[in-house]
Image 1 (cartoon, rainbow, N blue to C red):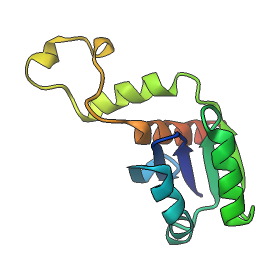
Image 2 (image 1 turned 90 degrees about the vertical axis):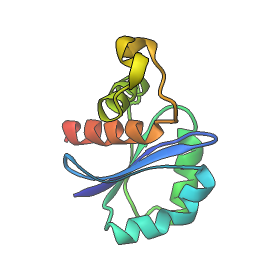
Image 3 (image 1 turned 45 degrees about the vertical axis):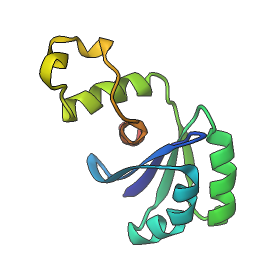
Length: 131
């Protein structure tokens, strides 16, 4: 089963297309960019379910996704609790600090770029763990 996991936000959103534990696509987009390619993603990747984080801007995204897809895809809300902290650690696993920053604990560092797409992956993993 392929899913589209989304971490919704006002200025940016993270998306991940996943099949079980495999990440097929991980991307950071503006909401406008996301909604412009939503239907193409659904068709190209043969998405069966849409997973959406349940916190900030989730209701706005949910309404717009349902309007755009005409409610033809199951839309499931997943708990986002502590997903940002988990995503930060995941970001640093894939992008380890360099130079003098290697000496600082990860808990004291902030990624140099947005990492909402890592949150989307975590939301997808949480969904697969539930079912």
